[in-house]
Image 1 (cartoon, rainbow, N blue to C red):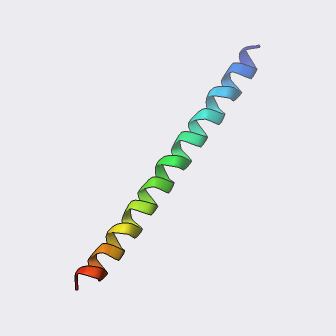
Image 2: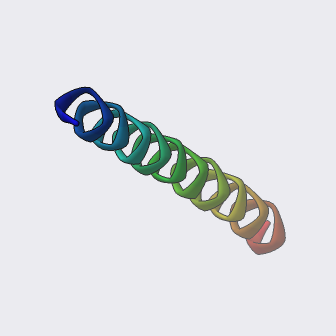
Length: 39
């Protein structure tokens, strides 16, 4: 039961980190597009 709990937490952490990285990538991409459009 404890092992299952730890695996669950690990899975959630992995998903959370992935979504954070994805959001950061999208944000930087949008910022780049915005800078290009301003020129």
